[in-house]
Length: 301
Image (cartoon, rainbow, N blue to C red; front, side, top):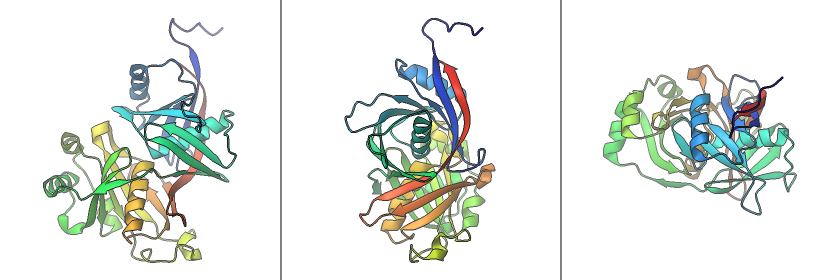
């Protein structure tokens, strides 16, 4: 016989999924509480700290007439206005639990940055990247960031501050090895209060016709990405949707990447995340990937 929940607690439907992969264990895990009605922010934060995943989401009825559901997104260290892998993972979990969108082709998620459209494309979901605000980094802060990352200034090709809800310092470097060999000082990054996304775009991709078969085939070169977020309690994120969205909007706009590519992230953590990026003819950047189911059950909150 199942014991009764303590006063104030109840069993809520729960799922754990793995995002930006078709194989559980190779992407970025996400915990999803499918019915968060009545939970306050402190309870959500406490549970997110307990899961110890990079993000935990809580689904609620929408407050906007055009939205299908509302989500609140928490890291172990605080709440986020938007994040990419929680967007795709929450949408997948909502649909798997029987959610029925107003539009069969597009799900509309409500979060702190406003409505986010999510397209359904076979086994893959893709979100419309929110509007990006970007600026040149402060030279002194950039120098401190490079030092904390252990990145030689000579390896840096370009840098921008990327703000699409979360704020990232985006760094474009001259080789994949310069990304993969980084050994950051996470305590120093936390003290600086700076999140960093480091990327390399293979020269073979730059200026390439995005619709060429070779640019999309299994042997196509990929953009290499790592994301470091010690200030929010995540030293290195396995695969990061918001960062990849900001990087794509910047790099494509400045002619530093093609309008269609795949990014690889997570290798240094034993993962194999794959992020599909496309800027459509209207200029909208879409960030997509597959989602693998891991756990379905209930959680007492």
